[in-house]
Image 1: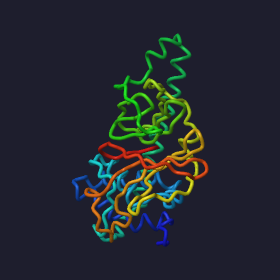
Image 2: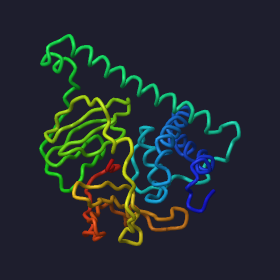
Image 3: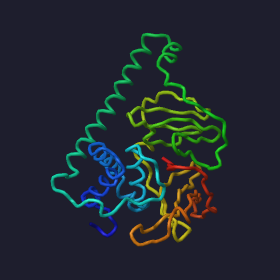
Image 4: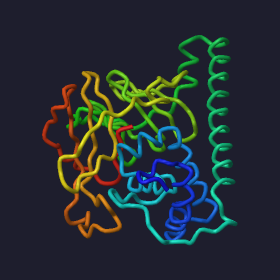
Length: 286
């Protein structure tokens, strides 16, 4: 394996047994565990070089694998090591291929929904078409966002002035005062600043191809940069987690000393003080 872990295929071969075994040890069915790991790895392949450079992938991937498998999040926990030996009869390639088929099927279903929407709109009056095909209205509550970014925790999407309860968001990106979303089903949605949800015909470029992350060194010894997003004014927001930088050798326990915080750095690289995020469960910025 390369020193920086940047070789995706080598990483998959090396960590596949542990990622799958870690899920199985927590009661996930064997096939479900393999598909959850494969789907998570496949979703990371295109941005692998960036993720290795900017994140602790053993921490972030394990959080995403657990979430996809339906397990309770454990922020800051690194993927287990030495759980299973490598087994030639349990190679990742067939499961990666199956994950690709599942992903393609989801996207085809999303495309078919878009075609159906156009057909209905052509036949019905515009008002009735909107009423008949609008997504189910999710719960929305008024709550000022203490952070300058859109963020997601549990099933709650935090916008500037409201929180929208939307389970199963796969990925999202801020658009104006709202956000564009891709659900785990492959469906595209948009949410405006008031929390109103509507279908989205085409994903914005930032959703399919996130911009290259600007270099950032977390402020604390035990801080790890987990995710980052650009802001409208040219600055960047970084989600940091003061968990173990090296899970194999560091004895500091995240439950005793860890915190999650947001750091905003302007276009010149000047960074504000970290703002602690008070939220349970996994936190995502995209």
